[in-house]
View 1 (tube, rainbow, N blue to C red):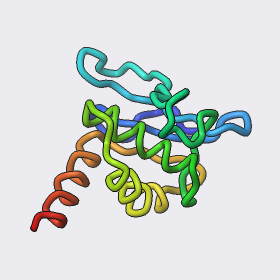
View 2 (spheres, helix red, strand yellow):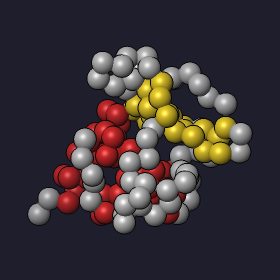
View 3 (spheres, one colour):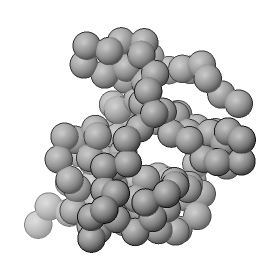
Length: 120
């Protein structure tokens, strides 16, 4: 079970705890070193496909909701469906099942790269 933050700066880590997948937010504005459970922002909304859990490493509704919540938390606003699917496919499908760490800087770099690729 991974509880140490292996990279500096704010970000997220996911792991399996007691048979359930858990995602934590590490740090952030005014919260350096603080570790909290990532909130599931879309519960009760029409665009929420899997309100009871997260998943990575597979193309599932749970993985899409995790992508939506990671992007929303990092970017500060709800991401488009296209962005959610692209992040799920290019990032979350490649994460190891036993645990992972994504910095907010890496997520922002992914977004900038995606924006460059989709410019006309």
